[in-house]
Length: 150
Image 1 (spheres, rainbow, N blue to C red):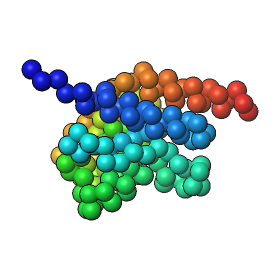
Image 2: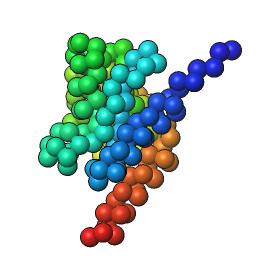
Image 3: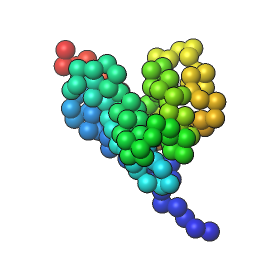
């Protein structure tokens, strides 16, 4: 049996690296990578504060970078790895990219009654909970530090 070193955990670690870059920039620590054929074609993290742009979420940055890389807007052969469950805006954008699969770490507890399945393309696969504790811990640390520094 051949062992593939490039599994969901490997790629989520790469997304977590991006989230840590965001953390260091005092951005909400969400990171994303987009993978095609076991190769990372896009890396991104939140830049909403840096760019003063509410749409500069990690996923949005990654979609743009991946589409530029492949020379087309459809990412149906790609997988998005993101540290936090995509918000409504990013889920909607994923619908239009027709991303093949979304793998996320922590669930977004603020979503309440808006299931991601209702917002993404019907053919998109979803996998949740990959490195969930690591993803959640980074978010909790960020907001704890924000509260303490007020």
